[in-house]
Length: 96
Image (cartoon, rainbow, N blue to C red; front, top):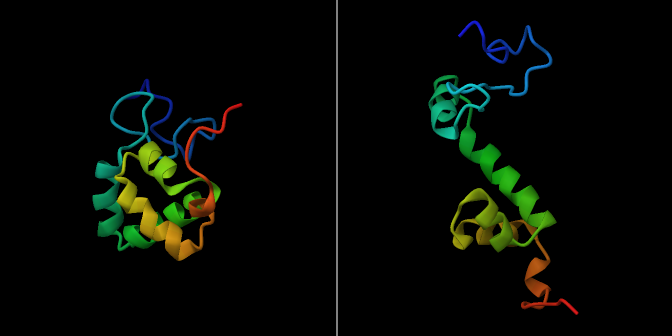
């Protein structure tokens, strides 16, 4: 563990990950971080929802869903709530 330069990010500003995982060179997984955040009383759902709302304003909801590994339905509702305009774009291949 002493050979991993990213285990103490406060003392290593050049570390690649803010939250290093157990595997060298990898960030902490969401599954490992969520219980720790809940234990500290951090509300994880509102932050995740806010992040998704911001993302669906920048790209179509199905694209964001696939990038995050979610079902399309998971991002459609936040897109509608955020007032996303991607629904008005014509579907299909627009390559010329």
